[in-house]
Image 1 (cartoon, rainbow over the protein chains, first blue to last red):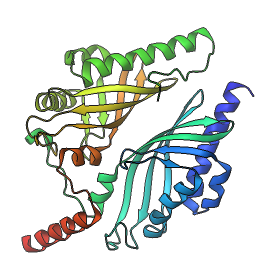
Image 2 (image 1 turned 180 degrees about the vertical axis):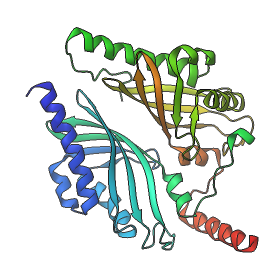
Image 3 (image 1 turned 90 degrees about the vertical axis):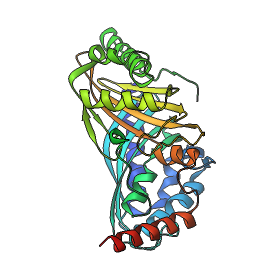
Length: 149
Length: 174
């Protein structure tokens, strides 16, 4: 496969992963993640390994935010890498990590680099604005203005 | 992750040259601006109408505002260091994945001088226009940094108590 075709495929895989999370069709992830897929997220001490670990991670989000959707902001591809800049939106209708439902509409930024192997995502480095999420749920204080500090 | 890996496809000389030039531009921006080696170099590295998005809850800053903000940060966190771990370049768009370390010596925004250091991750996305940086989006792992500094609760129970406290404060404020 020519380089650009492969990159198109990789970008498509990333979009399909986002679509699977958005629709709740988490079984579909098996088609887009390698069996030994690894996800690095500095918000958590341990990496997540394999599609089941990702389903276990996404499940509580979908339960708390039933209309959860991942919106694409930007896709950048080079070699075996795909950068996916996105927003996660949804309505807080059920308990989330001990926070009772607020009815708030969340809109939170994330950026990830995916590494691909043979047409599937094999590894992901993610930063998700977890602090922003908690602020939108009223569960973290608003930041003091740095310029006034 | 192996640092500074090259994910650029081998294409014709011109686009290869642009890719390399854009990668090098971002490297110089990280060293001079983010790490504060020579903050004034921003006048050469970025366009006059530079916009920086995302530092501090969705605030956009122009070049002057960003320089002022970042000078304050470097002053509060003198050992601030960004190390680029991975770069992805496609045309005029460059994404850098960097580790960010530092020890606040005085309060700056939510960063507090607790004697602790942070060592976390930030993404930076750059849009490049005629060999200069025109737009930057930044997404740091802010919660991780605050937790490492000991200024953010580390369990859902504590978050909940904090939220109830905030709610109470809001109600009493009325």
